[in-house]
Image (cartoon, rainbow, N blue to C red; front, side, top):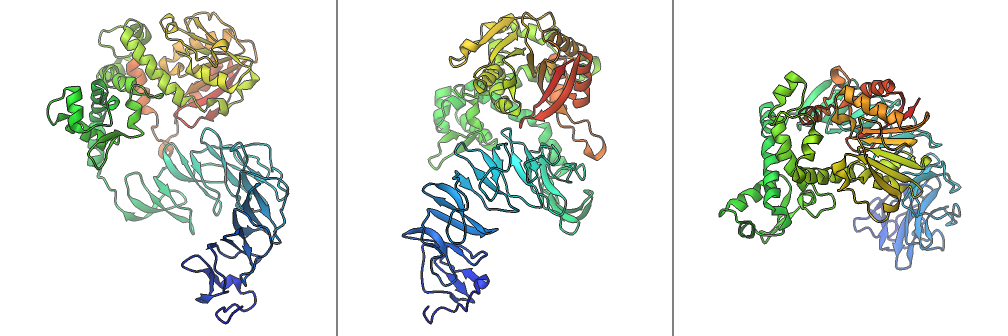
Length: 574
């Protein structure tokens, strides 16, 4: 070591990475003479990851190589081993450079509490033990580090839960996002927002926030959805207000009341065909669509405010990722939905007050069944089923991974429309067959894709009368919410008649929050009113579903979140 180095033997804990990232400093002076392409911090047992023209490896405090091997990337030592990326894959090494185990992975994290998250060649995450073997059998979309004996894992539906060192779920609660426990509490997010939960997965309080920090000496900083900042205690009580709301209550209410502006601006843009001709300048939009001078620019400005288009430096408008869903050719196009919400739904909502008085749906002509009326309007029927199919492709995509449907050889999708859910189940279960049951006017729109066409059939039937098909597994996806309780019970009774005892019933529906007091959120309330004015139906709570199922001869087994507004209710025929 030259006179420029200042390292007395082994004071590597005092080392810092130099500003240019090429070496380490000890008390402000170079710790050794060598220079590298990159260096990282020193970790126990006194080794630091570095890279140079020869590859990546670890060095001793004097800058010398700790071993002969070279890798693509190296990382710090944790619990006696370091993750490395080599030409043979990711794994861990000991301080002398020897592999910790023989297995190779697609990625490795760091060992914490005897467990390390890894990703396999199929892109699945799990944890391994120091011998490189999996700590449990399950595989996840993602897995995080262990702390205090637990880690967070994410399933294919986007739900997060806690597991222990052996992969066993701590409490069976799933959240939209989740953190490990800190002093007995974890940050968790659900559809309403962020909050804190205890080790049983139970909320500490009823409020939800845009952001929460971990508790520090019994208090945590939080940001509300209105932009205000505060410090709360472990019961959710506000202790200190740090910043007032960004929007006043009057402004917030006014914004809610003019929500119709957004709906009608989107409907008009779709009706005119704006998204199908983008990218284009405002003048080109006006010319192609025959709009009054400057009025294309006015509409595009509104769409820009809604985040549906963006404007480049040449003043050309482009559809954003969100706006692309309004193109008629998009696989998940909501162009038909824009017309539905702007026309049919808008008309029905004008009759909300009357529907609340009578308990019946609103309709301009005073007719009854929504689906009968729809069948009498071919153009509207076609548009509605395009909308239903787009929502189904999006909302039901994760369902095959939520439950092991492979336990069934066949499934009956009752009220299944044009079959999008059935197709998804068939693709995920190559040995399964499916039958879609729906009204006669839907049959002409049923066109199964070639990869599943030989395993899927359509039968015409009335879900209120005896079904023309039998099966040991039935799925009702967003069907029951179309109907009031008596009708929903009749549908479930027909489902029970169509299967043997022990058969499986799967109901896909939103679950209303039935909590009271500070726990109440009102989530789903507006959709519930929409079902009233459109069909006379309703959204329901878990207890209401349990009662309906029991009345019809089913036992509710469990309810699983799906990562969308829907949940999967799994029941068994008694």
